[in-house]
Amino acid sequence: MNNVNIKIPKIDYQIISLSVKEDGVESQLGENDKIYMTVASSPNTEEYIFQKSLDNGISYNSETEKYEIEILSEDTKDMEVNKPYGYDITIYYDGDKPKQKVIGTFEITDKYTFVEVV
Image 1 (tube, rainbow, N blue to C red):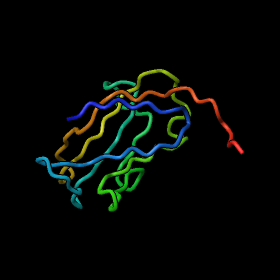
Image 2 (image 1 turned 180 degrees about the vertical axis):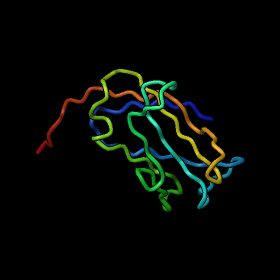
Image 3 (image 1 turned 30 degrees about the vertical axis):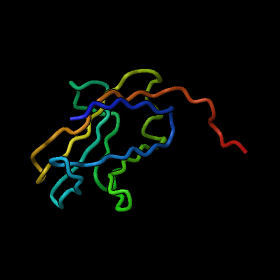
């Protein structure tokens, strides 16, 4: 399991790339496998701030051979700046065998430009 902390500006658009490796070899998930990224205020709550899943914010990029997690502006708009939230990325192999791959803090930072600069 990897520990990776993420910081992104409030209401920014980001793509997070993720390699899936099994036994040190990059692999693509099987048709019965599921992947989730969950952001929450604490690990003890069942209520999340936002959650991404395969074909719902997570997609496979065959050119880079990585999974891409799309963080939209609306995902972070209600999150507090400089407050440490937590997140994890978990894969459910065969739909029911969870294996946590990445865990860390998810922090929103200040943003200064809110309109497109011409």
